[in-house]
Amino acid sequence: MSRFWVVSRKQWRLGAIAVVAVMVAAAFWRYETLRTERETQAAVQAVRVIHMVTGEFKTKLENGQEMEVYRFDPGTVFANDGERVELRIRGVNGNQHDFVIEGLNLRGKVEKNKETVVSFTAKEGIYRIVCLTHSDASHEGPMIGYIVVD
Image (cartoon, rainbow, N blue to C red; front, top):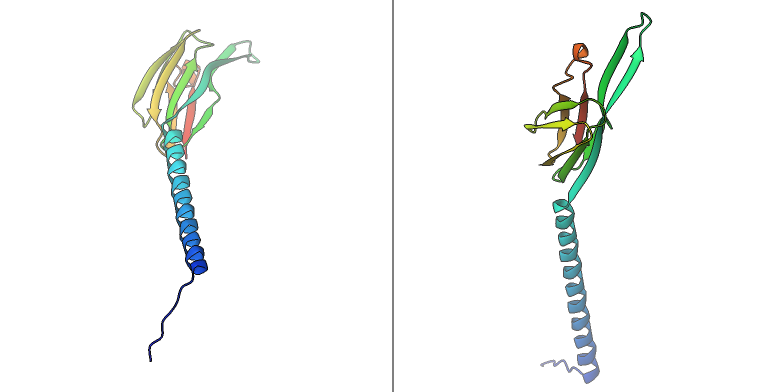
């Protein structure tokens, strides 16, 4: 004895609607996935601008001697791993600050009332910005800033 399955027009329509609904849902899901990937790539390729300035503190010691120290302000800046970074340092105090960013092999010079721009791609780690002009206490330092990349 053979059994046949008879499909009515109503069942065909419901089946076709179900297939179309699944296809639309799959297309929407794929579109959202591609859109999110494009936005993520665009965010990674965008340049993050970080501003710093050179600053100076002065004080008079008990013996009447004046003491000056220089610093980067803010002293610590943050970036994300893989981010393109444009570090802009404006000279406010001091005539000239030659500096090196350890671990990134970048060098530069900040002059009073001028802005120095250094660009790099951030890699996870902590990097010191060391002013070579004010490297220790005998040279009104140390003048050190930090770049923290997570």
